[in-house]
Image 1 (cartoon, one colour):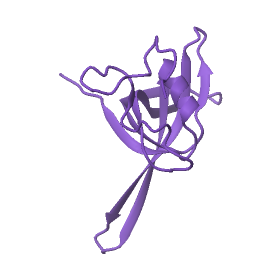
Image 2 (image 1 turned 30 degrees about the vertical axis):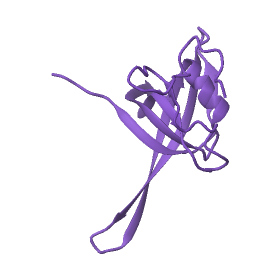
Image 3 (image 1 turned 60 degrees about the vertical axis):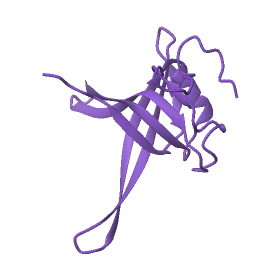
Image 4 (image 1 turned 135 degrees about the horizontal axis):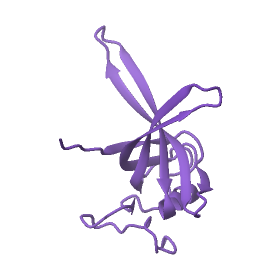
Length: 146
């Protein structure tokens, strides 16, 4: 049976990115994103719904997210759902869904202090062969040319 795991998400960071490194010195950044949805209930009243999502990126992309983003800034993400499970110290089983980021884009707007450099049309991350925007998140890129 075929399967497909793709997530597209646009929202604001809920906390500053937290950069760390694996024992093999691969950069890892963890951060949260909130998305908002407005809808009308059956009674005609307006409702707001916020979804909070944990995200993780690796490598040069992780370092770029850590460098250019902070709490409140808008971001457009492309990635896949990853399921993590573990046993806590008290013996209980824990689990969580997280988005593993494959691409991201800066978005225009203030969103808590600006949407990053003035390159909102730039995409950063995985394979960009079908996109005219250059990918700056891949290994081998020394610096983002702003």
